[in-house]
Image 1 (cartoon, rainbow over the protein chains, first blue to last red):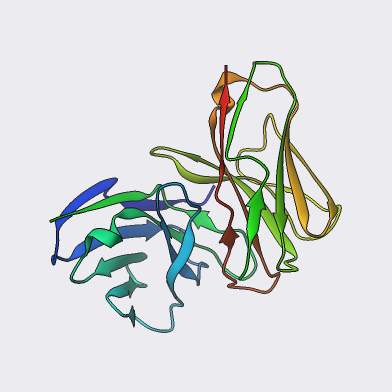
Image 2: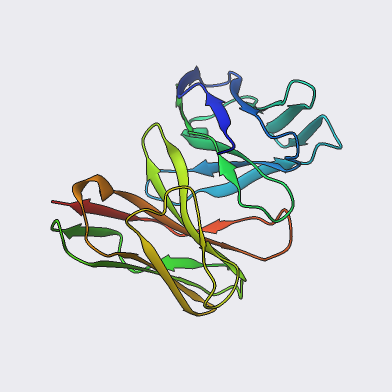
Length: 111
Length: 113
């Protein structure tokens, strides 16, 4: 079973700080790397995604950094806000294959 | 607005009962998925379906079965519920083409006593 290893399991960041969540994958065929955000009582929702033809993708305060040689990708949340408190899942796949999800990171932003 | 709905938010069943979890999507998606979410284990795929009457095993299919008689509806069945199936169950759907966003329902919290 292909794995996506996610860390840390939980993260506490002060308001205004930078939140960083890391993922590592094994399958070199993977070429799609989305991040999903889940608020309590809700299902996950797509936050941002990257293909390996670029090393970075930015959408507002959210940035994915991708390192193909290290088989790693990370989510950076700049100027973290209390409303960003949620569980974040990384995932990977290729083509139309099923997504493999990481184990999740519970992010808490404190005032 | 796209929507995936699940029949129950909370469900309590007894060991040995047959349990049906229903999922309906209104986006005409080809793909539908059932996941199980447990703390520290993330989202694990139970079964998925690319078309009506078609199903594929995911990573943890043991103890579960599925049914897809109509394109918009995907059911998860626990033939004989056990306490280790107490979990949050999430349904999702997506278009068939590659790299497509999965849309999730709100989840069903199942407790098996």
